[in-house]
Figure 1 (cartoon, helix red, strand yellow):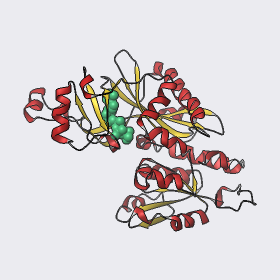
Figure 2: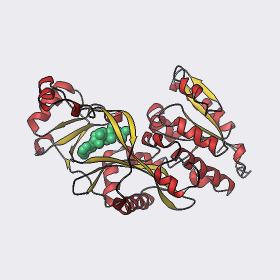
Figure 3: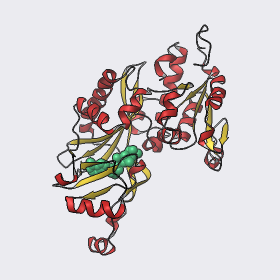
Figure 4: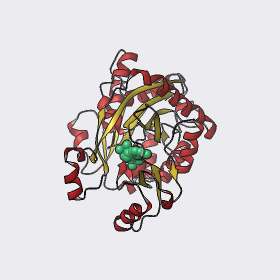
Length: 349
Ligand code: ATP
């Protein structure tokens, strides 16, 4: 923390500034800070600042020509202003895990959990321990005996994933399109409806909340159904999952008890994995089958872009809060309450 060791951190929210990178869910986070009466700042790559100027939610826009400018000096300036950094998907991918780990500026969330989330086998161990139902993973291509989805490591937003159903098909696509990629996972393809469940866990209230849910709008997976099967074959179209946007979902109410328990188990197990465990916003990415089995294929341990349709709150937050409550606003409220209670340390990683 930037304040000296002798002096206890200020309990006045006005002495802090909520800061994030201009991308992903920044508009929501900045608006959340506004709504909670905290000052905010966004750090943008030059040329990408238009939305942050046009939608008037940022108090301050800091421009960088390259993310490499984010060095110790840059961070020092943020620390001098008591900036509290809010990570999101692009935050980690622009700055890199190493930079984030080394960061000395105040950072909302647990940094150690990033390792558990980004390493596929550690992530699986975490989800298995949480007793979630996971898609089967195949060790080698020769074992493929049903539809599987091939995921390359670090393929942000589903880019380059493909579906095959035999070893021959796998090698045909892999060798033709991705000859130099060797880091991938072969996962059973679950036929069902995708559902991304956005949770929030506050270390202050110790309560797990369901904030909202979404499904993704993907190119070209979401457009293939508009062409006849025959035409798809004729055009030799392969399904791809590049994310274009997100759409709100409200789930059938009878599934809610299970979804709450799943989130709770994930938080509980995380406490045994690393220091403070998982807190703040996170997302379970699931597929629900026709038998209503819930398969979880991934966890995101931070705010996801799927929360963006809910800047004015979701049906779930409308039930819980008397005011519009987005995930961005909820996390700023957690920070603000922690500051006032003299418990800021508990929400910093
Ligand atoms: P992010 O890291 O941003 O979550 P990603 O690159 O990990 O994105 P995913 O969300 O894992 O991408 O998956 C991309 C698409 O593939 C989604 O439409 C998802 O529903 C689908 N998908 C992923 N795994 C499976 C699976 N095991 N069975 C069926 N569909 C799957």
